[in-house]
Image (cartoon, rainbow, N blue to C red; front, side, top):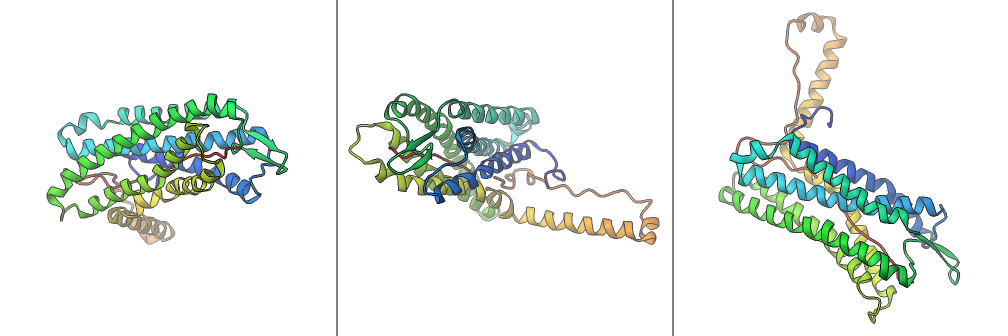
Length: 308
């Protein structure tokens, strides 16, 4: 579908979102195996750093991808007359570049700091789950506070504003745009449910080492919320692709076109009779007719930690 879809500005963002989500999902098996082994990491310090850096970097990169997709749809729906200028391929490339800058910036501190620590009393090697108090307060608290503000709170406010404005515009013709309204609401609700709890719990975990709350009390709820934030990346494709009737119709048309093309190649009669016809290309449009919002496409994500 990527190679058969016209690379409109919105599709560039959505393809980038898919790539970011896939990179995040690639490291999930390592985290799952780690927790099933009783939080015992057996793959070494370098791989632990890579897994955690990719996990958090792509999780927050996914959040910014969603914010840029929301911003793109806001311009298309609320300001259609300015969309031709603002929604350019160059602008989408700038947004894509910013996403990867965010990812690399989020990954760097985790790649440069020690992530594995042995707990002798439990005879396990933890990976980013048990940190010395001084390092937690002086290094990871500023790091995750910055991530929370710049890579969750800011894009969340952008999404909230853009989706609210889009919904206000679409509600004027709610019957005509009922599907677009449902998808917009679904994107916003899934984002809040999957990502808000883990980010709040993450910040609470690091915020004050003097809290009269045992780390064990926060660890289990945080791990559950972190799993839900990772699940956000799994359901992105269903939200942005498969809930769209137009997309399903185009997929079926593309598959039928491929079948017809194979039949024409295998049949000499079809080859001779179709030699004078122009080839037909099925394009999966990511935008609807003028004044109609683009068909939806899309995350991620979140964090960790067990106070030793």
